[in-house]
Length: 131
Image 1 (cartoon, helix red, strand yellow):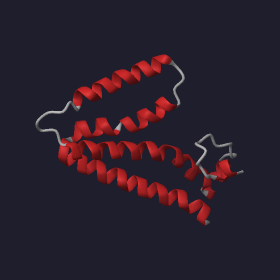
Image 2: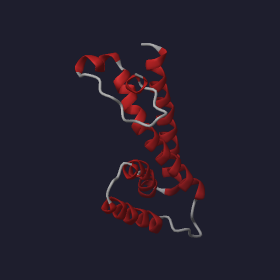
Image 3: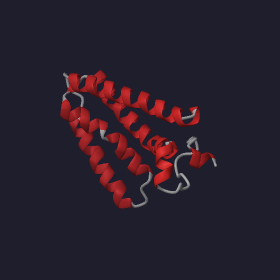
Image 4: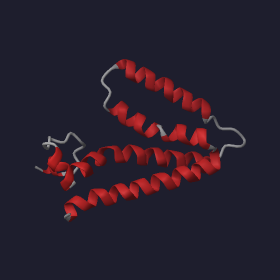
């Protein structure tokens, strides 16, 4: 494999390691249910960016209100735990796009299906976007 094929994989590994380290630390500080709830805001935000309907926005607002109810500040709020869970959410959101780029650049995946034009962000440098 070339460097062009390796860098997305290494980037994903770093993001995945950061996500897991911050999530497990957040679980230790604020508990499993709240940490995973906050972490799920990452893919929810990615889905919202691609949303086209008002109903989707309404449902997302309801989910956001539910999260707000869960994290209302109290005398025992662990702000570091909340922040770490949000870091995990950002990591989860950030590796959704590059995962497709990394998989598309793998030599084994080229044999199975024809390449399609990538629809990731303008910063994506996968072989589909570069061509």
